[in-house]
Image (cartoon, rainbow, N blue to C red; front, side, top):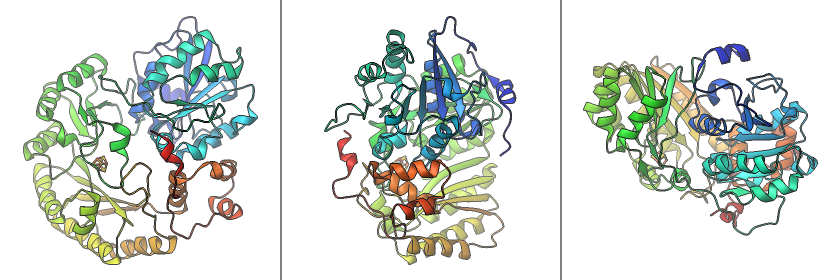
Length: 495
Ligand code: SF4
């Protein structure tokens, strides 16, 4: 992806924000551990940026981890000048990007090496699921929903400005924020994470033509998930499933959508929204095309699909995960290949051009025959239609707080064999785009899901430029054996 200058990125944006709050006295760096394009397509990152911008005493500026020189987007100020550096980490491996950014900025990675500052704060789904591998890097970890932190931490800074106040005093005050954990303070047996209490949908306050979803207004349509797939932590992270009322979703667009012509509905199960029809109708009346993040093809009506197509949507995304009924039963989600084949034809007749499918290899109990079932399902789907079929295949990774948390990630040799089989047997299909996402990074991702802080030195080495394989080997971590959670996983402490 072509990296543009900060000036170009800023010129592409539409927002209601003033560049400089009146009378600010405190600088805060708000980091996304990936590119501008990815970060600006993340509702959580943008939403909390908007919340932090409400404070007149704080100048919050954005940083993206792909910049060679960590300079703020808004003013090109170096990261090292910020007394508070906060990051939201949605995916485990993004921590490497963030540590690389600290390293390039000359900020010591380990909190024990920063007695004077800056205060480094981490949050986001990956750190909520398992903060222990990275606990030695952060002064404050915010587990769960960041809204309370975004409300209460700026107030702490008003009383105790960072850079001018003893750091420990600020950390002691921050430890009282719901969901905040200060690893350097007294060890708690249980660490509470903050469940969201927000009854307004989060949204992206900035539109940009360079985001992953160009000029699209993204808005949360629901929280949590009504399903409970064995490998997925969303049920635990998102709490009770809740649909934001259609009226609020439409009003938020009127108030903050800046007349965007495209709206992204963000949610785990958009087809389950009990007012989906009203939402689709409401946006159609405003001449807006609607892009749901993911839908269950077996749960959405043809009327709703036709409506989406008419509004301009040309691609649908959904996740069958497996083509084997026995595995699907264990997972708790079964979308039979027959259904996908039937729906592919329907989608084509409605004017859709692309179907994006997510699959998992290495689910608990999977055999080579099950991989064969996936191959034939994908072949049947691609044969049955002229749609472009984009398949993204990921390895199973045991996540804490899920039904499959005690299941192993298969040994490297076995997983590689299964991915190679897919690749070989799906060659030469003209309407298939196959993304096989398995590498040494996936294994490191699995380690980050289950480990404690003993892996921190490895992360520090990789962030400083050492290869992943080399670093794991030098630290006697075997990549080839199955990866499974220890008997008493550290993550049991998070409640
Ligand atoms: S995989 Fe999707 S449907 Fe299943 S629990 Fe997770 S978010 Fe819900």
